[in-house]
Amino acid sequence: KAGVTQTPRYLIKTRGQQVTLSCSPISGHRSVSWYQQTPGQGLQFLFEYFSETQRNKGNFPGRFSGRQFSNSRSEMNVSTLELGDSALYLCASSFTAGDGYEQYFGPGTRLTVT
Amino acid sequence: GENVEQHPSTLSVQEGDSAVIKCTYSDSASNYFPWYKQELGKRPQLIIDIRSNVGEKKDQRIAVTLNKTAKHFSLHITETQPEDSAVYFCAASSRNTGKLIFGQGTTLQVKP
Image (cartoon, rainbow over all chains, first blue to last red; front, side, top):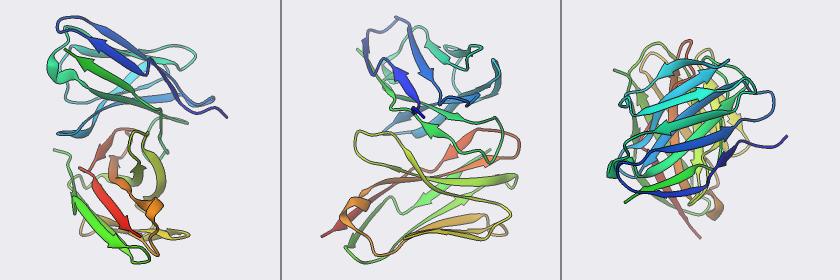
């Protein structure tokens, strides 16, 4: 099976712009979670989607949003970019939602905000 | 709130020695504890996990132990090799959520 894929791999944006990142889960996986990774804050949970519904949300401002499509592919959007949004954005897929299900990560999208 | 503390932040061992990384979680509802290995410039890779109904799990040179009473779990790597050098993250998820709360990571260096 193909692994989790993310596009684009790298992005450079300027403050105030918005960005959309995409994640395609492992075939058959229906749950997609998003994480932000920075040197200072580590890996932080953004949100989780299952069957096109957001099941959980982390402690991020409303500028961060996401959605999931019927084929389980997911997108996340960040509006009004700030310098502090520069990070590696990782998505992870699992067979289903809920505890105890292994999550497998994609390669990430490296976002740089200037 | 939910929190996972991980220690040490850095660990340097000689090839062939053992390495132990410890994590403590705050949410008593947590019942799934995965460990991830992240090499430089790569994605986190799931290396082992444990569920709350199990006290220990082994996979070749890697083992994880869980003490639910004390709310801590540990990763043990025996006979370390240079290719074990990476950042290791512990995580915990609470009942009925797929939300992983990660520790701050441990940079393991295995010296040949």
